Image (cartoon, rainbow, N blue to C red; front, top):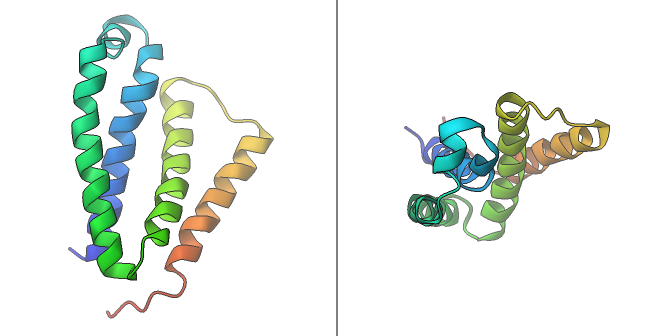
Length: 119
């Protein structure tokens, strides 16, 4: 598995867990009760923090700086939030949110645009 794939996996998993950590309280039934528990929310911060730390370390190795992970993390987080909120909470985005998601994808692609990847 390439370093870029590993980086993206770290970020996707961290953002999915973070979505449940923050938005899980709005789920109905037992799941909403579980994610409304302070202790559960605090515990979820440990894997999120570790995954983001590993992603930052790997990004520094790949890109040689720290700005790339900020932009990639922001863009990927925005896309994942949009997908999960629409599919799980059934909150469909308006036109302004759709434009923001498109811009987030552009930010991600721009960060990889000058990377020399050896096949």
